[in-house]
Image (cartoon, rainbow, N blue to C red; front, side, top):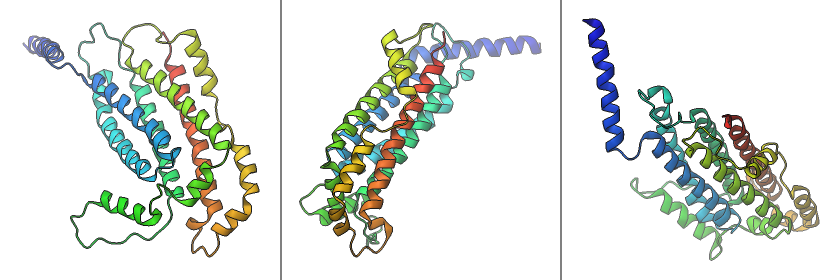
Length: 276
C-alpha cells in the first residue's frame, strides 16, 4: 500500500508540474532570464549615460535600479535549481552555476559602480531630515543640485572626463560590457544540447576571459601628471582624504580596472559552461 501511495504521489506531482508549466508562460528560468536582461541593460546605462556622460543623478538612479534587479535575481536563484524539476521535458537543465556566478560578479560590478559614484561625488555630511517620511532619493537629488548648481557632476568628474585617455577607457569598457552581457545572456537562455556560440563568439570569449588590464590606464596617469598643479589647487584645504582629488581619481581608476576583471570572470564562466 505504501508503494502504491508513493507512485500516486509522484504521478500527481508530475501531472501538477505539467499543468503549471502549461498555464504559466514564465517558469523560474524564464523569469530569471528576463531579470538578467533587465540587469544587464541597467548596468550598461549606468556606465554609458551615467559615468561617461558625467551625469551624477543618473549614476545614482541606475545604481539603485541595479541593486533592485540584483535582489530580484537572488530571490529567483533557488527557484531555478534543476533539482526542483520533477520532469525536465525537452529543455536542457537550467545553467544554475553559471547564473549564480553571473549574479556574484554582477554584484561585484555593482560595488565597483558604487565606489565610482562615491569617489566622483563631492563629500558633504548628510543632514538628518526633519520629516521621517521624506523621500530620501529626492533629498539626495536636491543635495546634488545644491552642490553643483546647474552642472551635472563635480569638478573632479569634469577633470577626469576631459582626459583624452578616457575615450579609450569608454570604448574598451563599453565594448567588453556589451559583448560579455550579450554572450552570457545568450548562453543562459539556450535550451538545446548544442553550443549557442559561433566560432567567432568563442574566440571573443577566450580573448576577454583573460583580461585584467584597463586599456588607457597608463595614459590617464600621464595626463593627470601634466595636470598636477590643477589637482593640487583642488586638494587645498581638504578636511579628509575623501576630499582629496588624487585619492578620488585613484579609487575611480581602480574601480574601472576591477570592472574589467569581473567582466572577464563572467566570460571565463561562460567558457567553462560551454560543454556539450
